[in-house]
Image (cartoon, rainbow, N blue to C red; front, side, top):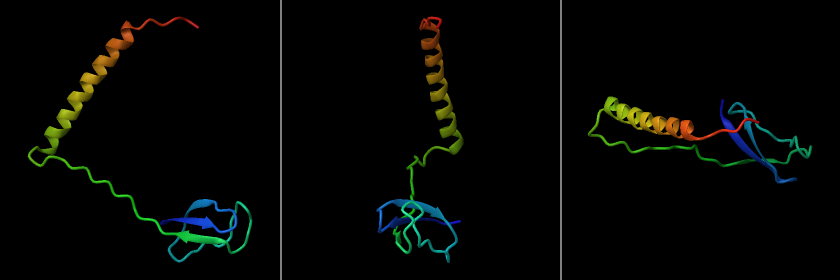
Amino acid sequence: MPRYRYECNGCGEIVVVLHGIKDKLTDCKICEESDTMKKILSTPLSIKKKVSTNKKVGDITKDYIEKNRQILKQQKKEAKEKTYEPS
């Protein structure tokens, strides 16, 4: 179901609504005014991450796993060295 953003001309509140493409929101549920909602133009969010093309996906995954393994090992070491007082 598409997501739409509306702004109330009465109170200025912005709301996000999920409804069908032919549906339309007209009344503000916050200030309870009639026929004050105006659809705001919004663009979809698109995130593109550049990944080096000279590596296979499996190799990239192995690299990430190894880096996280090292981080986890360091965090475990720090946690063991830290002293905790009973509450």
